[in-house]
Length: 411
Image 1 (spheres, rainbow, N blue to C red):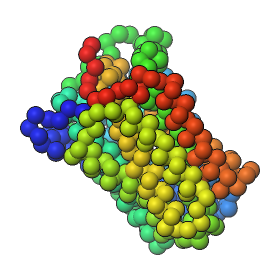
Image 2 (image 1 turned 120 degrees about the vertical axis):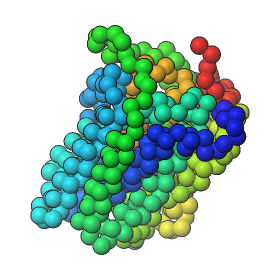
Image 3 (image 1 turned 45 degrees about the horizontal axis):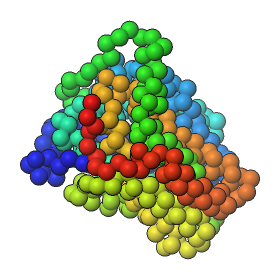
């Protein structure tokens, strides 16, 4: 990673547009965490069904998969800032719909799933736009610094959001959803305040070849392919977020506030590492660091699965967050620096599907396995699988393993 010549560890914030972008992402991520905690706990309270917890993730992931050929092209051809703002407004409307169902005492799993599908469509379009907009707001020498702070923004929201969401839900689900609506509205307003940045739009007419450009780039660039697919399979197998309501209520015997603590624990570990990376970036052996991070994530998942002690479970989740932050940091920096701007939206659309598959589809995997085998075996099997993935990918992608510094490649 290249350090700005000025030595300014807050280099990205010297650009006003990036500052607005940063705080907008923070508010939106905070709102998403509140909604996630509230929906998960409310769903389990109403149904007591682990499969439904898994379906929450599935219905948010499917739009990204089905729209993958559209969302990236839209981000490359149209104003990424406008796409981001519109999507946040749609997200606020979805949160308002959940609020309305709760106020009317009309909670229904399938109505909630319908709202989550719309929420998933919004996220499918917003993901590539957001990931592609960030590099347009800072010069290349400040980009690694911006990526580190982007990660810290998300992880800070991941710490505070679940705790606040648990506390708000403990008071009232209405309050939780109302706060999420307000945060998303403020996030959209901040995006509207960002001046339109310079963007290299795709110049060619829409064609099948242009739509598939993201897939072609990823398949041809083994470093990017290895980094994206490593995260996909590691988190797909190791994810345990969907089952946290079960662990909080039935295994660790904690309430909504305890669920918030569990959901926040990975973020605590991640933000510590993210801030460290912003001040002390990875200079050498980046590929090895990425694989070590994935292996530690699997180990933390395994410990969390077998633990029946709250402090040990929280510690394991903190390890998972800290190690995942290393992997995310290396992966996102590689994708940002190795991808030309004119195809960045399409590449990030593929990346967001992989991320969605690892997170939301991973939740479906966990929920389905938990409904068949139980929550503990579902998490333990996932942790073992993640450890295996780290080894297999380290052997299968030697170029990624041998990446030393996080600098842009010579073109």
